[in-house]
Amino acid sequence: MASTNNQLEATELFEGQSLLYMHMFGFLKSMALKWAIQLNIPDIIYNHGKPITLSDLVSTLQVPISKQSLVERLMRFLAHNGIFVIHEKGENDDDDDQAYALTPASKLLSKSCCKDHCLTPMVLMSTDPILMGKFHQLGDWICGEIPTLYEAALGSTVWEFLEGKPEYLSLFNQAMASDSQMVNLALKNCSKVFEGIDSIVDVGGGTGTTARIICEAFPKLKCVVYDLPQVVANLSSACDNLSYVGGDMFKSIPQADAIMLKWILHDWTDEICIKILKTCKESVSSNGKKGKVIIMDIIINEEDDEKDMTETKLCLDLIMMGINGKERTGKEWKHLFVEAGFKDYKIFPLFGFRSLIEAYP
Image (tube, rainbow, N blue to C red):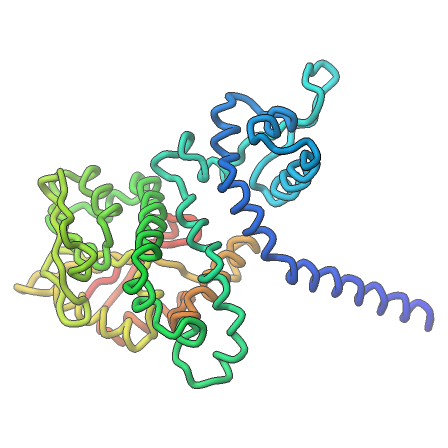
């Protein structure tokens, strides 16, 4: 019996070791993904017109023969993690080795395949050495008095950092725009959200990617992109129903039938979110008309979501933790709406790891 217990203990320890090593080397997933983008592999495979063999891929990349096996090992790693798929050669195949094809994930990294939904800018921003490096300060930051991880690692808030470095601000705007393009895929499932309203303000709408998509889908809907003056300066639109207004959402928000907050509230603490929602409530309640606030954000739901979906949401929560923001559970969202004075709300899980929420004053 003792040996059985010892053997069980050893098995558990080895399982624990495996889990720890998986976490220790988890950063290699993002590094391998960045490698594939830097070498333009998703577009190479797509433009090839069929699964590409290792020899053809190496030839296109002009990789030295001595490093051909490195490409194979990286592609094997990415395929194991769902970025590519490996087609093994069959008995009737003329090709002399296995071939690589795109998956839904790698299609989103191909400008040729998914021009309107390419997430390459988001990957490049997320894997930037400086932006990744700040997480080395997690321990000191959490045990210290500095408010945000950005301030602990870089000496400034995230917004000050972006404002002071135009190249990072451009990368950030490109990343947010690429993410906004995914909204187009969900519009067909939530057209009723925009029915019955004549005007909408996209608060923190950046360069207007989401607003343009909405305006094209609903040409009778007047849409205003509302962001900081320096963000919307010199922006114009070819759409008659789209305009840009500079301002501060903490002071006032233009009046409209609906206010949209896409990926905004997760940037802030509960106290600040309640303040923003109260300002939104005033905007849609003017002149005695009761409008609504449309929120596109994450709802953590560990009980109902699949493990991978929950892990994605929890990873994003840690990202937001670095700027004192957070991803919220359904209970936490309810708390915000109640404290901000909203009478009711509805949740529509339509956006992959995000949901759409309608809040009514």
